[in-house]
Amino acid sequence: MADISQGQGQGQGEEIPPNMTLYINNLNEKIKIDQLKKSLHAVFSQFGKILDVLAFKTLKHKGQAWVVFEDASSATNALRRMQGFPFYDKEMRIQYAKTKSDIIAKADGTFVPREKRKRHEEKGGKKRKEQLDPNQAAAGSGYAGAYGATPPLSQLPYLGARPIVPEAPAPPNNILFIQNLPHDATTMMLQMLFNQYPGLKDVRMVETKPGIAFVEYENEMQSTVAMQALQGFKIQQNQMLITYAKK
Image 1 (spheres, helix red, strand yellow):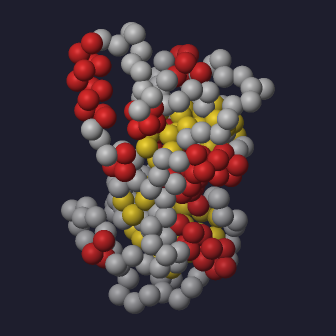
Image 2 (cartoon, helix red, strand yellow):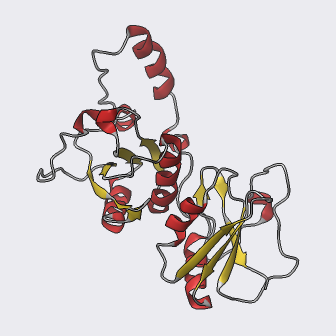
């Protein structure tokens, strides 16, 4: 959990040194917390390993979130690329967090428990968290495998049914076939992910077959750019498999 004291008091004019945690505000307050956190993880994990995504239901912290990266360079790249990104119909405002996140403080040995915490939480919860391998703290990281390369089926997590794979590769075209999505993936989540690449026309989920979707671009050059960039991208624990759709 991050130190959330910087919430509403984090001023726009303050010079905050680059660090691993990004503070994001101007978020759509109508989006449920769980969906907001999953969507933030989906769009930010392309920049590097995410250790934590924090958002809270309290009135004081509505419209705000914190994304904790494993390293400051990933956070810096994300800040530059995602500043003003339209996220659920509102442009994100991003800056470095004012104070260090607990998970980072624990990793570098500077963590000091706040006085309000109960002793048993400090003794029990703190020890359990400190024993966690930081490399296992994130739900997933950015790109896996070479761009444009289809990951072997043996590396795909089992979801209760075999991934649907075309019998023969379809020729390049403007529609992408997306597989191995988590069952709670939403159209909006995929739109935000694929809208980073020019020419997006439509995203279609298949209600009767959870875990797959079709993403349409204006032409095959644009769809190819998106496929190469997002091939193997992880949403939660699921590594996307992207191919051209059969027409």
